[in-house]
Each structure stands twice: as structure tokens, then as C-alpha cells.
Image (cartoon, rainbow, N blue to C red; front, side, top):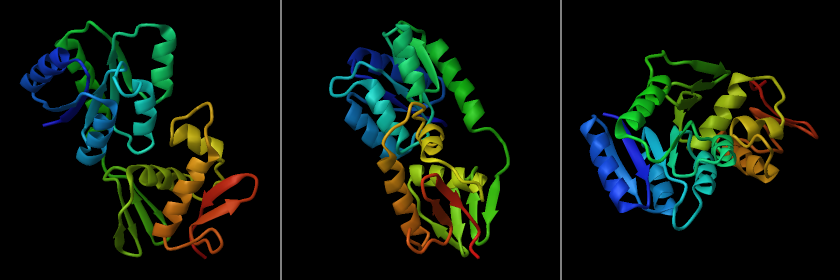
Length: 226
């Protein structure tokens, strides 16, 4: 049963939509604020998030960017905002779909099922091997020297991206656009911090790299240890 997280501050909508989606075969949890929703998304790892933009504590687009920094969970924005600029901002921030209120439960359910078909299909596991490092992009697991590694969602996304381009120098701009979904750039420090965390878990440092080699002024590449 797919687990959906509904982040919506309107109690009436939250209740009625939750019931409608539950009756259509989904397990539904909900949050009334952005920060509560972010915490639930991190803790519960839902299969899909339905996100309202008009939240009381934080704008939904800001929440979406924060969510994208820690998770690749599919997100459907469901909001009363119908301006083209709002749609573009949400999609650029990482939304997978955008629906405008009022919408029917049937329409939303159809969009949910379409996205889940794309993201949870029956494709076989794809394991990328770089020396003693094995990254399984379907199961989202990493094994190093025969031992499993515990990575955060974003650490896994970063490692999988670099592993899929092993030996290729990738710029920080590319990483921000493709891993963090920030096509217009962002803080390089975000990349640096995550690379530092990843290096620590891989048993290396920037000064003594094993897999992650920095190319000064260009970017970083993942290589097979010599």
C-alpha cells in the first residue's frame, strides 16, 4: 500500500482528502505545517508527498527546496496558486507535478498513480561497481569492501550520480543542478559539506582521497582506488 504524506494547513481539506485517498487504497498521513511535514518526510520516508504552498510557517516552495536537499521523494504540489510564475518556481524547485485547487480526489489519485508507476516500477536493480564500492541505484544501497554503508538520502544521490559518471570530472554547478535540482545555481558550500560527509563515510579525506578526487578549479570525480 503506497504511503502518502499530505502537507496541508486547511483542516477541512486535509481531512476530506485524506479520507478520499485512503478509500482509494493509499495509506495517508498528514501535517498542518511545513516544518512538521519536513520532519515526517525525513522520519517516515513516504512514497509520495502532496504539498500545499500556502503554509502558515514557511512558504511551500521553500519547504520543497529543503525537502529536495534531503530526499528524492516524488512531490505533487496541490495549491490555489495558478500563476505561471508560481508553477515554474515549484517545478524548478523539484516538484514532479502541479495541480490547482479546486481539484477532484479522482484527478489527484490519477496523478499519484501515474507518478508511482514511474518511480516504483518493476525495473531490475542497477548496480554500479567502482572497485570495492557497489552502488545499487534501485535498492538505494551501498556496499564498500563487502560492508553496507549507511548514507543519508542526499549522500546516496550524490554518490550514485558520481558513480554513474566514474572517471569523469563533474563541476559543482552540475551537482547543484542535477543532484540538488537547483538549475540556477546555489551555494557551493552545500556541495562541499556533503562531499566532506561522504568522504568520511568512505574512509578518506580531501587530503588523502581514495575514491573522491578533487580537481582544483573544476570539480570532483569518483575513481577506482589505485
